Each structure stands twice: as structure tokens, then as C-alpha cells.
Image (cartoon, rainbow, N blue to C red; front, top):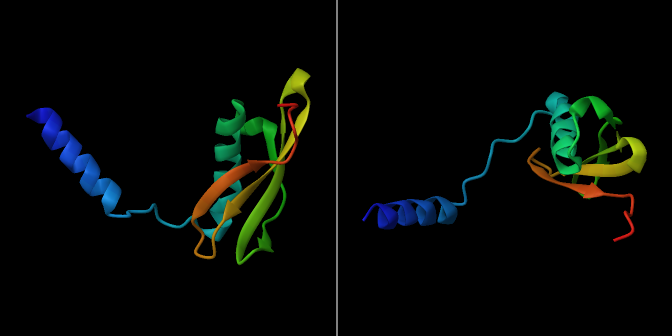
Amino acid sequence: MRFRIAAALLALVASSGAQAAPISAKNRPAYCRGEASGMYGTRPLYVKTARPVKEHGGQAIYGTVDKGSEGIKRFKCRFDARGNFIDVMALTPDGE
């Protein structure tokens, strides 16, 4: 019975289309550093970002992460026109 209730609640939340609140313009670089550090498995201290730029109707923040012996990796964070975070895109191929 508990499983059915939990499954019903999960389905309700998933179908509601709930989104996180937009990230304020001044907080986007820090948010980007946090997301990139998670993607690359490092601390935000090793992530550097440039100023946001307008791109494809939203904003992009380009940056680098120092992976030590693996080298410097380039990435970009994307935000839509409302300031919602879209994703972190790797810009440096890793030979995969």
C-alpha cells in the first residue's frame, strides 16, 4: 500500500511540470561553478568562469576546470531566457 501511494505521488509530481525557480543573473556564475564541479568531480575552487554572454535567446557562461594530471577541461553552462539552468556542456573531448 505504501508503495502505491509513493508511486502515485511521484507520478503526480512528474506530471505537474514543476520547475525550479530561475537563477538570478548575479548568481549564475556561482551556480555554474557548482554544477560544473559536480560534473567533473572536483571542488568549485578549481573551476573558473568568464562573464555571461547572450547566446541562442538565453545566456551561456564559458569556463574551465583544472583536473590536475588530466589537464584543463573547457565547458559552458547554458541558461534559458528566463534564467533557468539548462545544462553543462563539455567542450574538451576526452578521447571517448
